[in-house]
Length: 88
Image (cartoon, rainbow, N blue to C red; front, top):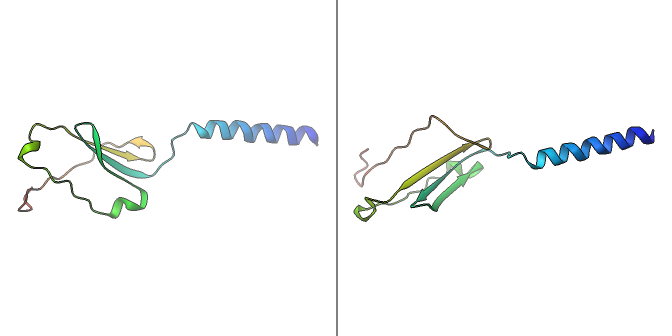
């Protein structure tokens, strides 16, 4: 009986160790302007709409969007950028 309990505890410890290195997560994205994080949304906040205003001073700035899904970098996503008149 003690041997069974010892093996169970060891198995739980090993599983906990392995799971601590796993990146669990839901859906989310991050937007960087010139490598500075300006917007970050994950989980339940994904339905909130945030605006990032860019003007002519930002013409040469670098905009980076990182989409995450279940702890992995997302692929095949689209981004729509609109002007002040709501035109794409």
